[in-house]
Length: 340
Image (cartoon, rainbow, N blue to C red):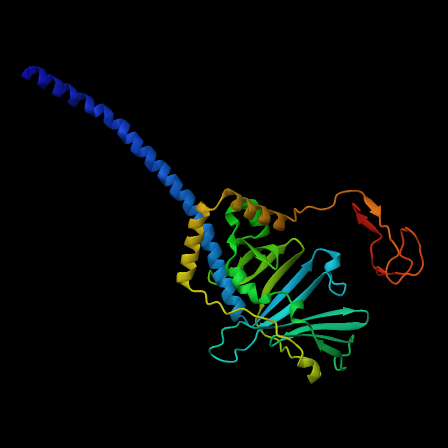
């Protein structure tokens, strides 16, 4: 019995080393897969980290730069302002009235020329104004008044909207990102019921600075640059009786970006990315792709002539016609529309 037990024990000892290579291969395979997953996850995290660094720089610049120059590019003719498809808006952070003021107020100005007149729009201390004067006569007393506060886009939510933008760089092909946003990060955010893509533009001289950013939309694009000097934006002369009825444009609170909040937000977004539904990731990709490539739906049918029917202010029955005899719909209406 003793000899048999010793032989059995020796036989088991001889068999054990044969199992160790398989265990080593398993450990090596697990380590390799783990390393690949870590590298993959870290590569996606870097996109989120760089995007939040870009937001940190942009939010700081929007509140600290002397002036901002916003170049608007309108893509649809009905949106043109006084016949202009591109125009500049200059904005300056308004001085704080007190050290405890939390609102971030901007003054702004834009000017257009049309029909022999200069049309000026300004925003001063929260009140929006419109002035019209003959072109070239800057000293002439123009017709001025205030604009309804609800006619101004909700600029008070711009800072918080940018702060909450979702990273989209990792969802797009590297070639597309490099073409549309070289060296920058791409983020998607909603504003005033529309979706936009923000492309950061980091400075070539310093990692902690940026040279502006660009926004892509389905109806318009906006290019934002920082100005080293701030123009003087003053309110036009308006009758006191009219001024009393002017309402203030609401503004949002200042946002103070900090390094701890940057790290917390980047890690939080990266962590929630894995928990988000695949549909949500696809929606972010689809929005970003359509906006930066202008790949949007359009009417691709054959062009057909418009049909006019006599309506308001018309006492004569012209029946159905392909022209507008009373010029009721305006002199610049296109007589052909796509897919009508």
